[in-house]
Length: 449
Image 1: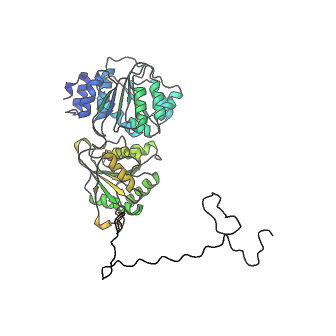
Image 2: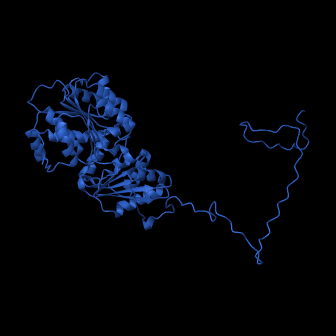
Image 3: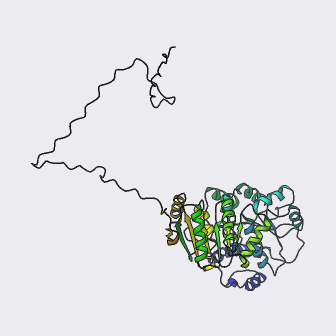
């Protein structure tokens, strides 16, 4: 029960109102040390409840009587608009019985409207790094009194090229503050560098290894001959699999639009989401999917983070992601909170090596699947057959009927050596191979003419 945590009674009331019964493992591990004021570095898989694991301790620290707001007291940085919007809703739900107010800063919204909101000075500011820096440079922000800094999906922010932005924003928080860093993967050297610069004596909590994906999610691969074959497979899966909602990931916006057009033509209730869509369309796509007006979402990796949609139980990788971490975030959309899900990756000739490297990274073997009606010619790389004569084996001696050894072949006659020319050998410009001399054409003069 959440009552085991030393949370303010108004926060516990909100938790009860939201029907949160038992805390998840990440909440059990992270909330107590966060309440003590420790800096945390937490690795927890997508869908594990980590948002509540940092929001509740953060709000508990900010609790108090209503006072005029003169400073931003908590800052939450996230990589995508969708994740930021979702986190804002969580903060508002948990703080519904308090005086704490929150605000949102992301790209795609009116800059002047956001500036007006900042003048009201929210207690909690939730933002994506790029747009937040624009407001900082415009003189609209002051982080001098920030008490809690949260970096959620820190590995993704680095992948998206926000490392310098995050470092600068963290550096603007001058006052001694608590920093909570969460991610779904362990990340690489860049993340370790960030941890060393923004965290002070952190407690490291690793709730899962990268291979420990959602237990209820089956992972399959289906081989495909080409892009059109993949489109046929997607259509077959959407027609024959049992699912409430599905998301299909592509690596490019062009392919996402093309696939979306095909599905709409086949009368699927679909929507498309990628970076070229404006904020209004992106919001509409997410809302339609959540409310059930859309059953299928075609998206690029812009939607791989921050999507928490109930009933999303089918994920299709039209294209394989470029890394094991990105694969984890994609299929983490399904099988959430103990539910069941299916993740199918379509593998063409150019995808096989990438798929194999992701298997090795996750230390897993994906289930191979064949759809009889659409079985293609490509079934993975061909195995190289060993030659009939193994290298290093001794040849059997051939003997005649009389038992004598068969006579060896006579050595081939050598051609008489050609007389050496007095002219120097021609050599290619790279000095590696000799060039052949051309025969002079009929009637041609000598080289000296």
